[in-house]
Length: 80
Image: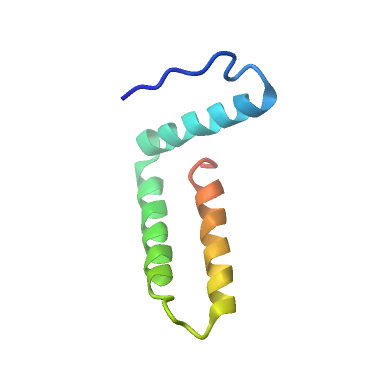
């Protein structure tokens, strides 16, 4: 499914940055498959750890694990 860009999308600094980051994600997926596969493996490790945090007494470590994973998702995929 293709979603057309909204009017004026990419014509201001913020939406231009978001559009570029989105396009870079596709570029990474297509042109850097080896690196993308590594990012997928790292993500799987994060998710395995997070799935096993249920009722852990180490709530503070879990908090940082979740924050670290969020940072990875927010920056890792678009910065290659």
